[in-house]
Image 1: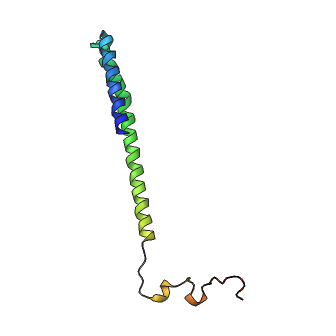
Image 2: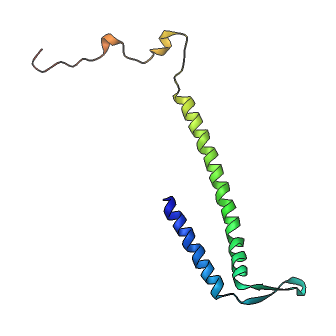
Length: 112
């Protein structure tokens, strides 16, 4: 799986490099207050991609962190609930348990 992930990133990098080489044209951007910025098209597209990616990535990481904290809390409470309880009286341990003499036994057919 790691190989496929690396291969995918390599293909994306190669595609972006080819795009940059083929579209290296200057672009003029009019900003606020009469400011003008001259840049190249690939840089402009990369910046706009990062403006969309970074907030989404931050939101994803924050929700994943929150869900991991909740999961760890539930796992801790589950291990605490299923841990054997130590009690000082033997009667408390056997409350609700069937005494050994009252336990059903298997009798083969035709014996009775």
